[in-house]
Length: 151
Image (cartoon, rainbow, N blue to C red; front, side):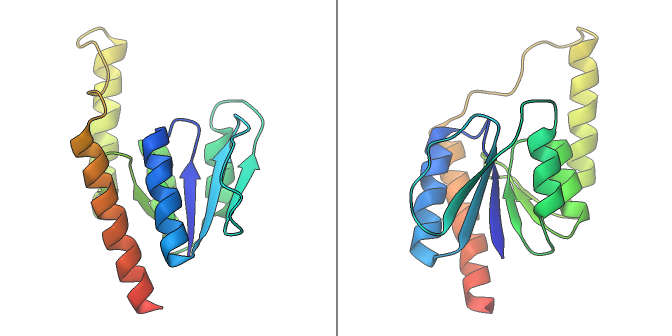
């Protein structure tokens, strides 16, 4: 199992949680970004730099991800694509996406996008909170613990 991070928009505090988690259980982490990230020099962490452009990082993650891998992303369309390949997706607020949940989440995302583009509603997601950070850490720990005990 590999853990991928859609790193361009991932909050720094979430990256730090991820670094500690992969160090603790020694799994491979792949950060995908077009921003030339500075990451830990741990041997189980690597960064893949991709050119700028819409969905370039997403396309790279979808190309590489395999059944059973975990992708950390706030991008619902990317989550849908990786779940379709048999992977799992976890967003930085702790929402875990599976084949059973992603289509509904994608429909809600598309509806909200439509409402925003037609000025029916304004604004974006709520600010990132301590509660979000804790929910993410709990879900990641739960997933990685389950994986560690099945391997």
